[in-house]
Length: 235
Image: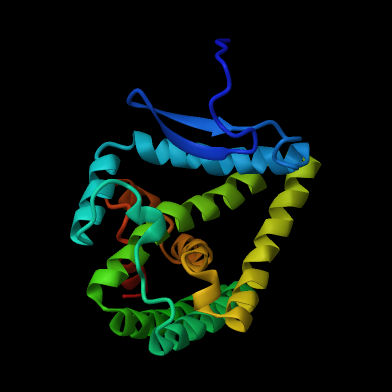
């Protein structure tokens, strides 16, 4: 163990780079106001971000995404001016939310493809309304944060097989996807902003997992192409 004077907030939970090495910076459970189980699931999320950063070419892909948006550095990841307040964009995202809810609620595997096709139709309408440049920001956030959210939930389910507390947190956070989709429709895209991309991205990863289980191999090579993978998955 190495120790230094504290330089970061005690309630931080993030994956970042330290001297070229992807690391996790996370406060203790009390500082994060988390239970032990909640803290473990949060750590799983940040561990996936650490994994992302270790993938060959991933950091170059992030830089390329920024350049395609005319941005430099990394601040654009948080502050890119996506047209959240545009009524046409908001309406298209509301349609996506409803179709994502229908997919999550579906209990019949033979209907997964049909529901995913309906979702993709709404997704294309949102892409048209937002414009290609802004849509590339959506694709980035889906690949970066949406897949991380989905992986957090899947990893928590696995860990929950031997830990009842983690299993309960995993179940709550899976249910929270549907709750969030309903709240997004009630409150609107202009309120949720990029947070809505995380939720929709997790749903899109679940769609891929049900329809094209090998999708993760494609993700490793092209992490910001979830839309293309969905198109391929439904034919």
